[in-house]
Length: 341
Image (cartoon, rainbow, N blue to C red; front, side, top):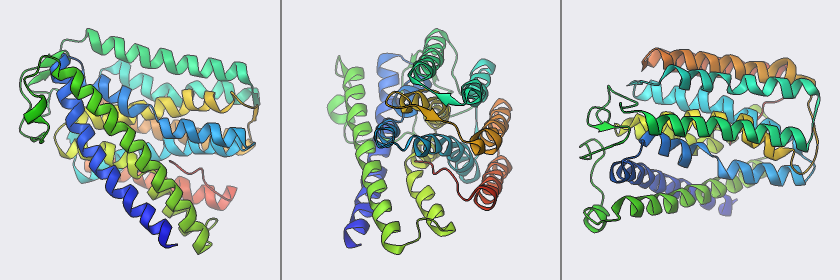
């Protein structure tokens, strides 16, 4: 139990430090290389590397259903917990193009035809990974062609175009690395390399949190109870909460929303595709009747709010309320909920 607590503390401290650094590094990389910050955020934070590893481990252990539940639970938690908390704590302006919002809203819908098949095979996995690659590729290409800020009404959006900018706004803040990197000829690529290191730290910290959570819940014997599921969900979504809330708090919501959009797209397409690479996946009735429709509905609601141009506090409260309702119904009617992580 002491070891589990130490893992949780170490994971939390490491995650917080790495996320703070990642925000600063990505912002400076976008400025130095004249790239879209939103695109970099999708590429660096949207692809959930730790979820992919978890999916492969579960699938190899004949736990494909649990892996699918984790993918669905992650998508629900990203919207109902992560995006909701960001809006509640710090309402912020958004300026996503309509096609970006539509792509975000259609991510869970794209999974419906595959679920209707009944049993997913390796071929279906390739198709889902293909959908993920096309979706991400479309976003990255579109961002590279845009000459206006993704977020016009933010401190960063006022000074930085999607193809780069001149100065780091005061809201981003200075970091010690500026003294060694700023002004160098290859500064942009140095920031990218540092961002990769920070992302690796985020993955390691998430693994520490997951390991500590498993041991702690097992020791308390609450894994199947309401409290146990709540604790696990909170711990396993801590990474995404920080990756969304910290950028919003520091005036760069491009990174936070890029994490939300990218994570939902990846979890429901690429991650599900990876699950069936090692073994076939038989879809349960509860997924088709309740869990997937819940993901579709909650994602559509979030997309509607994003398209409105500003995430307001009541938007966050409503998203969080819908997530709680889903959670209660799932526990009462289906005996459990997919855990996000």
